[in-house]
Length: 273
Image (cartoon, rainbow, N blue to C red):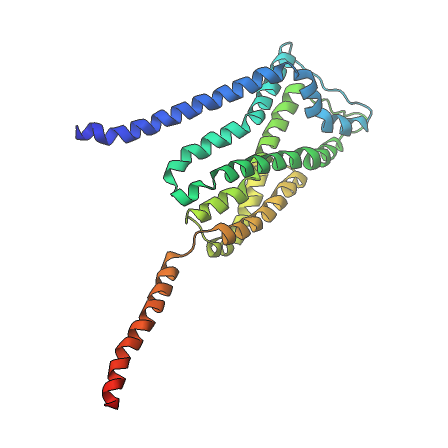
């Protein structure tokens, strides 16, 4: 019986994880089916920055080199749209799965955390789409000459764009993650300030690994990360967990003063007598 009792919490935890994953997959599936009816329009929106940059050179067309490439590309576009549309459900299920490990006063922050997660993800993806893509595509297309023309395929562009948009979306979650860690007591403001230079180094290394091998897109990802890190420090200072030891010392100091006065009073009265 003891073994069953020890295994039951773990089994229940796995069961909860399974249920939340199933609901997440259902949400993505529903988004995928709805997005497939608008696949051509969605792909046009996704390729708009590249088409705009290519139109300056007079060749604003994408190609597909395999017969099923266009079909599978539309499927992937629909799936990507379904994932993005299901992000509220995904973030909600994630934070609800984490919530049992939180204190009661910390659970009240779950709904704001879910909303802020969606907000930062949308801001990050929008930053990549509206700012990074136009400048990055102009940089890449600048290598074209009279004898060399850019002829990007649908599959290659979708792979590049989806990775970049998801990367910028998740990267912009940094302030929320660090603030949450500070609230849990895992990191502190002093720790974040002390390791700022190492964080900046990691930002540039990570940007070099995620983005294409050019300096422009690397810097355009690393610079927002630097700003987001500073925002994280502010969030950790405002919402971070207070140092328990300092509070205890303050209580001890406040508690010692009345006792000392009470002990000194009889002595003084004896001296007077």
